[in-house]
Length: 511
Image (cartoon, rainbow, N blue to C red; front, side, top):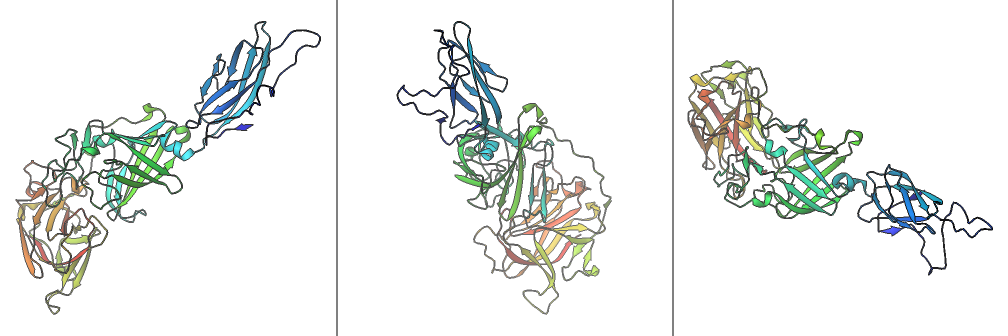
């Protein structure tokens, strides 16, 4: 059996020394005692160096005027020296029949093994190119604390109509090293790029789809980010390490801000690297690309698929229908509070801390007077991007705000924190629904206090009827219009960055 490789284009024939040396196979000799010259079938082959499935056949038959090739895969040819492309790897028996004018035939057969010299690259880029799209059947993207999923920060997105502009995006890897992104005319306004960027205005509502144009491809700071739109770039793939490097300004995969050059990429980068795990779908006809980023102290796993048969892909859902859920009973408290002096039940009313990105330590010394009543310490953990302190009601209920009007809390901002970079001296208090509906960040109400004084206790007050930020814009709603909010959060130091810091809080109250 002759085994083919594609390290270079080479023929499987011996070199001719002039025309004097003949190395031909024959199924028969001239009949003795006659002048008849019978045909002799003979061929060799060569594999294309860039396409291991393409084989060029050279015909060295003698005394023949017509030819018939059987390539062993159900295909044939009558050309003298054909070029044939196999559809898949495998072992094939190729037979050449050479025929003369008298109808005399000669046959030669050879066994050919078509093998892929680089199976991993073929799985990523096919024999010429391969297009990948977000998985439409199941969760395609989520956010965790680490690759072990020790904590899930965001339960993820799916093809449910909330982000259709992500699910029609196409990412094509070419065998020639090209990488092409097709936005299909729409783009996703990612949180932290189009809004919620420190010291910048909001140009596009975050967490929404919009049509691509020169006017819309502008981030919250007014920067032109059109390079993130449709375009062709390049890539390299190291199968031994599972790393893919994208090169070219604006090349991205997953979410545009994910990358390797900075923690907060709000403009296109010139290079992006990510981890890739490829899975051959075999007979299912659906291959999988697991792309992941460890970025800004968090882990982003993203699942793409490629279909042998495009008809296998589930339909794109373009309209979101909220899933059915069982609303919590709504209570109408007159006060919700926590002193943070300890976890004794007399120190809090209804409010109970739950696991979240930041760390709350109860009962620490007051930074201004160690002999005073104990307070709470709010720690932003270095390397973690999402740092809200979250609280639930106890027992678990939603809040009816009819008897509540004001938020107050005391905050101490140490000047020992480094506020020269991404860490801010801002305080946010917000409300969200985690049960029905489940995704609080998609429709929360938030109150903001900016530039809090340092090294002193500052009492902050918010009017519940005047939130500074509402995730669903222009609907005129306040928490007074809601009966589904079951989570309260406090965020200090800003968002969308991984800089650590320590702060102190006491006497949180809503009444």
